[in-house]
Each structure stands twice: as structure tokens, then as C-alpha cells.
Image (cartoon, rainbow, N blue to C red; front, side, top):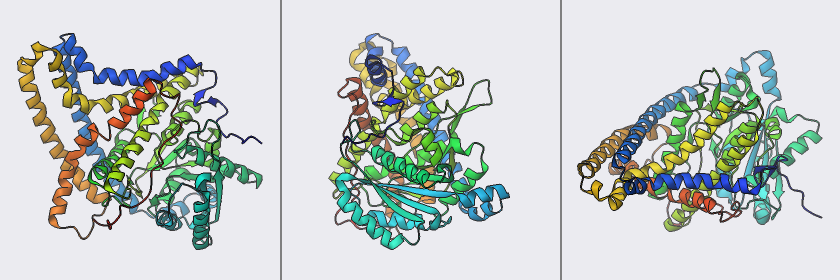
Amino acid sequence: MAQKTYKPSDRENGYPKGVPKWKQRIYEMIPGLFMWTLLLLPIIFGLLKWEVAMLIYVSILVAYWCYRLIIFMVGGTIAVRRMDKTLAVDWVDKIKHLDNEKVDKYNKLRYVYLCPVYSESMETLDPSFEAWANSDVGADKIDVVMAIEDKKKDIQVENFNKLKEKYGKRFGSMKYYIHPNDIPGEVAGVKGGNINWAARHTVEDIEKAGKDPKDYLLITCDSDQRPHKKYLSAVTYKYLTINNPYETFYASAIHTFGNNIWNVPLFIRVQTNMLTMATMHMWVISQYIRVPFSKERVYVRDTFSSYIVNLGTLKKYKFWDPEIPNDDTAFYWNTMIRSKGKFKSCAVFVPTYNDAVENSTVLKSYQSFYKQQYRWGWGIINFPISIAALANNKDEDFPLIKKLLMTGMMVEYLWILTMVFVLTFGLYMIGLVDEDYKYSAYSYNLPKLLTIIFTILPFISNIFIFIIKRKIMETPKTWKWYRYLLDFFETFLMIFNMLTFYFLPYLQAVTEMLFGFSTFKKNFYVTDKVKIKGKGENS
């Protein structure tokens, strides 16, 4: 008997049904053509003898980079202040003092903690379950659903039984679903197919029991996530008090990797910390874009890794698509399009604590990190799929201006990926093909100016970054004074990361899609969740 396939009814291989293959290939080529054109722009300008155009472009990049650095510092500072204020509030008490209708809604509300697992050990799972069980809304309001991959079912069913024995009397309920292997069309190595399978079965079971999925908030996150005890209550207060709570996803603006951040290798720690702070500042500065000549907003903060959404909303917008190698940001883009641009984001400034990439040795940790970034790089599939869906949507309730703003957000992301490379190597590249530029005053003075700018600005921003890091993550108590000094200067290594781990795996993914190495890559590396051998905590 053929295995039933659970996927969105309006999609085929990720694309809206009816989009011909030749159009799909064109959409897939656009990101690669755009990115490679930007990377080769110095060569193009040099061959055309457009030295002034190159200088203007570099000036634009420098100005934009300075602007991003300023809002990065401002946004991070505001985020920390909001975190302090948020953590000082008793959110459960505030909920109890809402009007009767909202209190009744809260009393009916339940939470589904959807925990996808592959090869995780109890060393990873037990602290996560302990943290969710300590949520101040009460563990009895949380129903645990473990999403198990069939390949690892023997290990994970045993782990589930151990966890149920320990936490079964605290949580409202605990169950698991096993996601079958080799379902036709599904991508392996990402959690999308697994959580899609478990969530759809959860909704089916809830409805069979005569209950309404709208009475549940679904928590989707990695198995290593440990929330602050006030996370769920802060989200719940927002959910009960904002407009259109069903058309909203909720997330922590303080997405830290504090579980093991001081144990992981240097360059992994640097980039992971910067990811935390980048997420913080974007929730403050760029959560939405105002539609020109209108009071409307387009919310551009997409779902990433961990978020909460009403279970009825998840069903309405067709869960996740298991045929594409991305589940978190793809959920946002697909839902935005299906909701005609009305879906929105809501942040709470309560921290969550996750694992940074770590493996049994330093070398294996870096290999795992590259593979993770490469998998994230394949998130670029959102571009062709979303452009195809936007072009395919003729609904008058979905204004063209909203479609253009959403497209612009994706294009800007590709541009940002190329900026550090062009600023670092662009002036040397134009000199290789343009003798006039090589012997001009520009070639002598401009690199010196850029060196000064990119020495002074990072140093100033590093002061803010150092202070912010101390606010959101505790340092090991065993540190000596010199370790704090090293931590201060670590952030300067971000430029190296932006030319390597932040750039190369993403470029690899975009280039593969450009040349059509596969319609969509169907197999990925599952990030191991193990510790470096012989390295204790607080290193």
C-alpha cells in the first residue's frame, strides 16, 4: 500500500501548481545571475573603463555599511532595554487581570510543544524538557508531541519513554509520531517533513476528539531549545491583546545560543553571537515596512528556527512543505502569499537558549558548521518559489506594492551577501583589468581610506557589542581578566567569517541552483548535537 503524502494541496515540488518547468528554471537562475553579477561588477567596470562608476558604487556600499552598523548598535541597545523591562513583568498576573473574555480564552488555551528529533541524546533532550516544564504558564497546559524520524525510531522511542517517565505527570500529555522514510518527493536532512507529518497528525487527533485547533498555540523549535520561564506567558499576553492574533506568528527577539556558546570553536562562536545580535536589532529596527501613501504595513521579519503560531492558523495556511529544503523562513513566505500580505510578526523580548554547532572535535565542528550554513544557504529556494507564487497571484486584495516590497526584501538580502567581498577585493579586481585605474590616484588613496573606515567603525561598534553580549549571556565564572580582553577583540574576526562561513556556503547553494545541479537538492546533512571530546564547560 502506497504511503500517503502530506503536502500543501496547492503546490507541486514547492511551486504553485501550473507553473511550467521552463519558468521554474528562469526563477531559479535569477538569484545566481544577480549575485554573480554583483561579485564580478569590479571586473565589468574595469573592462568598460568605468572607474568613476566603480568609485560611486564603492561609496554607496560604504555608506550603506555605515548605516547598517549604526542601526545595528541602536537596535541592539534598545533590544536589551526592552528585555530588562519585559523580564521584570509578571505576565501571568497581567493575564489574570485582563477582561473576562480574554481570561476565559486563556483558560481554554493549550500549548503544543512540537519537538523534532533525529539522533539527539538525553544529554540534549532532558534539559530542554526541564526548561519547558518550568514555564510559568504551568506545564499542565502543555501537550508534548515528539516528532521522530523512522531511521532513528529505536533510539528516540526509548528516549521518549524515559522523558515520559520523568515528565509525564507534569505535562498535560505526551505522545510521539514516527515520520516514515523515503516518502516520494520529500527532502531528507531537514526537519520540515518530520514536523509537517507530526503537526498534521496532531490536528487530526485534536479534531477527532471534538476539540478546536484554534484553542492551541503550537511551539516549533529545535530539540535543544530551552526557553526562559516567562517566554510562554509573554507570548500569551501578546496573543490575547493584539489585533488579529490568528494572523500572527510570535517569536523571541533574544534568540541566544547560550547553552554551549563558550565551548564551541572560535569562529563558530563569533558568527553565532553575531546572529543573535543581528536578530535582536532587526526585531527593533526592521520588523515591518510602511506601504507608501498608505497606513498599511508589510511585516518583513520572517520566521526563523523557533516561533509560535496558532494551530488553526497553521492548518489554514497548509502547514509546511516537505518537498523543499527549508521549513522556517519558507513558512513565513508561503503564509504571507496565501494571506495576501496580511500575515505579521510579533516579538517578545524574553530570551531563549539554544545550542551552537558543536561536534566531537574542533575540525568536525567546523565541518558541521559549514554544512549547516550550506543547508541554510539553500533557503534561497524561497526566492524562486515566492516570485513564482507572487506572479501567479492575480487577487486584487493583494496589492502590487506589497508584492514589490516583499521582492525587494529578498533582493536586498542577496546584495548584502556580496558587500564584504566587493569592499575587500573589488578595488584590486578592477586594477587587474584596468591599467588606467591601477596607476591613478584613486588606486592609491581609496584603499587607505577604506582601511581607516573599517578599522575605526568596527572598534566603536565592538564596544556596544561587548556590552550587549554581557547583558544577554553570562560569561564563565572561571575566566581571568585576559579572557575578557580576548572576548572583546573576537568580534573583529567577523569580517573573516563574512568572507568564509557566511559567504561561501551561501554562494555554493545559489550557484548550484543557477546551474540546475538538481531541481531542488533533496538530501542534506543533519547537524549533530554532540560535545567536543575532552572539553568541559566554561572553557
